[in-house]
Length: 111
Image (cartoon, rainbow, N blue to C red; front, side, top):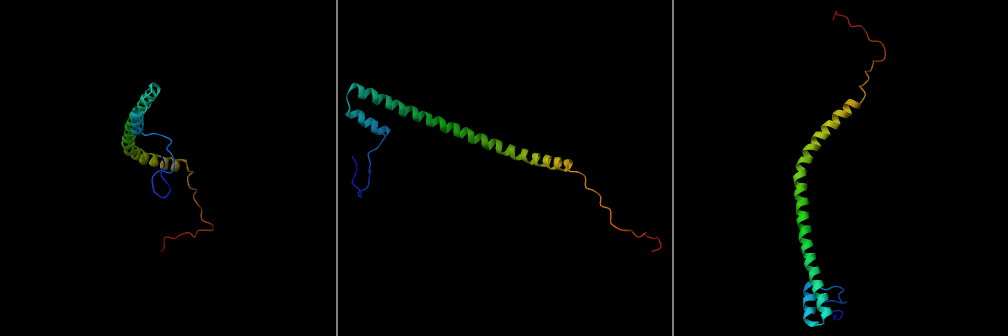
């Protein structure tokens, strides 16, 4: 059943049932096939709920691992930056000494 436009509620029929909707449907349908399908749908909802809990646990473990490694990575990053800086200095050619152009006046000790 859909509501009329302008009165609120759904405008279109739903494409899926909630777990409570399936439970209500089982009270209306009494055939063997309907009962068997209903039981399978309820089992599917239980599996989805179980999987959602597992995903939450995995997400929490990943977050804990990120927090644990953030401090270590920051410390390693400081050391790596220092190592790369030294390597760049060692790889750079030595600066060439510039010789002044022209003649240099000899300095006398008489001053």
